[in-house]
Image (tube, rainbow, N blue to C red; front, side, top):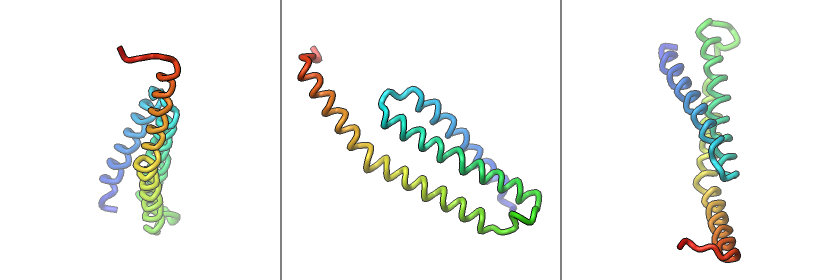
Length: 116
């Protein structure tokens, strides 16, 4: 594991970004946006924690983590989950925004509120 330090730095940065996203998610007023930010923060938190734990076990040279396939499988599953979240952000959330703006326009029309 000659690249172990780089992985520690990468996963540490991902954990820090997870904490930042979670604090931003608390301030978002729209429910679907808050849910998405929390899902993304969870994906950026739990799997890197497991990977850092695996790297520590690997560094201690225990027999459990002697296979690199465990690390590769965890990394690939994490990347697949991030791609699913990216698809959700690109394909699904714009529909929610469209519905929200339509609902706001209807409320403004029904209640007689104008921008003047």
